[in-house]
Image (spheres, helix red, strand yellow):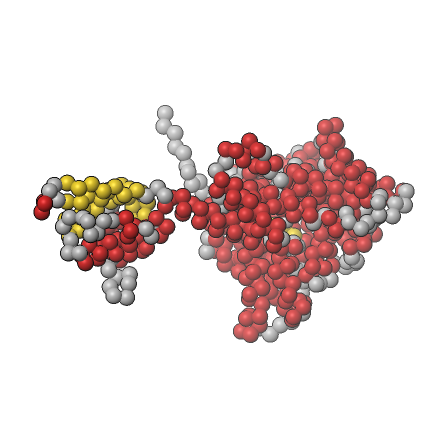
Length: 508
């Protein structure tokens, strides 16, 4: 029986994934998991949205409203079920200088333009470039993420009342031990409720969510940025918008790929790309600061709370608004120690501990380990996941080029005597810019007989650098008055040489 294996399946959701929302709605047990997961995410998002607003230099309401609109929009538009999108530090850092220099209206205009850029990138197929991100970069991304999630909790652990530490420890104990007894309720939610009750009943003096900033008391309204629609305005906001679009899209697609691995399902990266853009456009017109996928909150949703559908994402967005506007006084009582415990658990669960075991490092190629380390260092040093991933990909490309270039071999044999002598060169391997640079130096121009044969039957010419190197070889032999016979080029290599030879230099 013949078996067909599709190596490049069409991207999209399977029928089973498309029906998962309806199955969940029909199952009280699954629906409870999704709703409680959304509640945990919302509680964890509120203080972070406030903190990111402070980073961006805007009112806390701008970050909270952005988290609401981003989560609700992406729940319908996104290509990765159960992934959480909201206001993030990565996008806030990129666009923050615009607030200081030109004010809130230009800031919001840049958010809307960033969404437009992301939609255009989706149309151009940018999401398909994800296939070129190596596994070592992905592992470095995950490990850097775990480190950043942990280090982002340090401000809430340094210079605080001593009661914070036993409360964080108690929260971690609950989160780790409760799943061994029951998984009916997400352990992070139980930890938040218990620690909040303890803090309120015993009047424990510890930092709370309310200390982060003032929660809103009204619903978001449509906001049209008051900026002139001129080329000058575009020149001002475009660099910030493009930076936000690139960082947000890269982080979102990397997070989607991470969730794919955790859930053993596929996501529609192209849909996620334009979904992120549309969500940012919607968020901008509601006066929000925009954002992208949040890896930490997504891990809370998918890993800690076991959510799997869009219901949890939608629930998180709606509850952010409800909790912030109508139950702000209650949410403000939640001790930050409880949320710190949840995020520490997420950081530990996110980190790929297997990747740094001595046994793993022993059999992994050193180049792969180097790519992972560079990705981690680049991300942690810049506090920017996008920069770390770009550094990792560039490093992987350079190391791959170096490794492949070493596989090129040239063997030389001499047949015949006197005027009948012929120098035979056999070139084996892939010839491109890295491997062909030394091609010119591997021939014996002066010593070879008058007739030279270069056989490329076991090789392939990939780029203009190789054609230029081959031109240099033939010209050098002609300088010595010797005839060169090029043989064995495959169809593609022969066509490239016919099109480009002797046209690659100023004298050609």
